[in-house]
Image 1 (cartoon, rainbow, N blue to C red):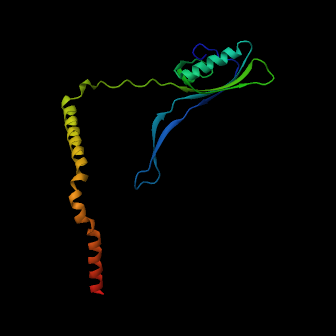
Image 2: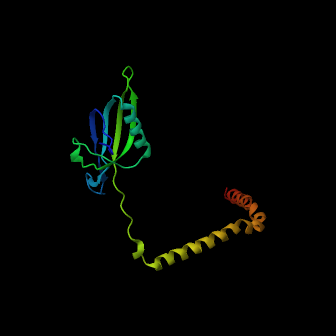
Image 3: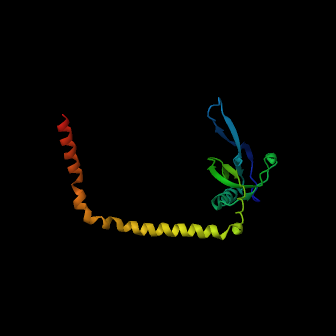
Amino acid sequence: MLDGLELQLVQEITVLERRVLAEHKPPGMSGSLLQNLGRRPTRLALWGVAAGTQAQQFVDDLEVKFRDGLPLSFAADIVADAELEKVVIEDLRVQDLAGKPERFAYVITLREFIEPAEPEDTAILDDAILEDAQSLVGDLIEGVDLGLNLPTGLEPFVRTFGDLLTRLREFRDRIESARG
């Protein structure tokens, strides 16, 4: 059952579970260490056939649930050990079976929905930290404002420094010819 919708004639179920491992190679040590970072959300791939007078309605209901993208309740005896309570339809493929009226093949990929953690209470933060951060940003903004005036403040010196590179090259050439 997928949120009250009975999945018709399910022919195959594949459970896809992956563990996240980080490999660390400490300097001076042969080999590496593995750190277990937990598991990724469980995924299920279901293949089935919808047949009969209600097949079109089943496909339409399934598509609405897919497009909504909301977590759905899920119950299945065969995957009871996976302890999936809520899932999201990650992928949906439907095929109208030619030559068989009112018959559709479907493939659904379900991903386990894990409730996001509630944000921590920020009331315990010290107000002085916020004031310090605001004062630092305030100084930064003043510095940016001063930096905007820098190109126009250098205009009187452009003529003086404009031919500096040429004069330095001439000086280098004179020193090299004197050595040489």
